[in-house]
Amino acid sequence: MRRPAIALALIGSIALLATAATQAGRDTRSAQPFSVMLDWTPNPDHVGLYVAKDQGLFAKVGLNVAIHAPSDATTPLKLVALGRVDVAISYEQEVFYANAKKLPVAAVAAVVPRPLNSFMAITPAIKTIGDIKGKTVGITGVPSDYATLETALASVGLTRHDVKVVSVGYNLLPALLAHRVDVVLGVYRNVEAVQATLAGFTPRVMPVNTVGMPSYDELVLVANRNRLDSDSSYRANVRSLVAGIIAGTSLARSHPALALSVMRRETSLGTAFLTASTTATLPLLAGPRGPGCLSTSDWAAFERWLVSRGLLSTTLPLADVVRTEALPSGCR
Image (cartoon, rainbow, N blue to C red; front, side, top):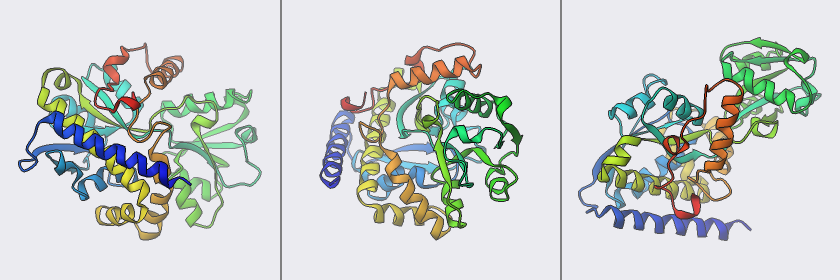
């Protein structure tokens, strides 16, 4: 029953590509170099980007897109701010933190338009967040973990004193599978949940936005705000890139075999995991208004949460943090 809707979304994305090419006013025979830095190594979260490149969607709008994985995951936004890469994929909260540090970066499109971060348990007795009362919770230990945990506990009338918190660094899944903790926070529903299933467990996954957290975009495309304001060519390139990613994501979602084939060439992930993770990821790549869309009201709500939990000292001008002009009108 979803095929007609998917087909319409794809037609709309292709139309958007044509519009972007017209607005850019380019000759597609002389594609302009444009660099994209990932948040981490290539994985199914990036499938829309890779399918767009593989299927020539960027070339159609005059872009020669080069995709790079960072050698240091802390640098992509800094490199965008310095103009050393054109755009990067990063996390919504990192865009806020970067702006608090006066870096001129802004989110221009959603890559994964919903939280992936989740609580996860493998014990049948834990079915809801309220069931973790008296249990041991494993976290990485970063400040946002404590804020997220406290928010989730408060949603069911509990406090941090009602659980035992253990910092296990980034060994969340091993700690859970070895029963050193009862539940973990900080795993992704399309990564560690898949790994747990492949290991023979039946994970109970609770995305953070289902347990009291405001919704947010897990991954976003980030551009240089100063260049958006001052450089019409850069602005047109960003618009064309966004159109290509939206079309690539729609194509991947409607043709999962193509998506998997492309990702097999782009990653070194094992076949079983990549297949299961890609299958789990594709439905997560579009929000209520389709792929790429950003909700400024959702960003404002998430910013208020960051401030309320002391993760951000004060609110920032939202127009600096998130820009929607590169998106189709139905997305804004």
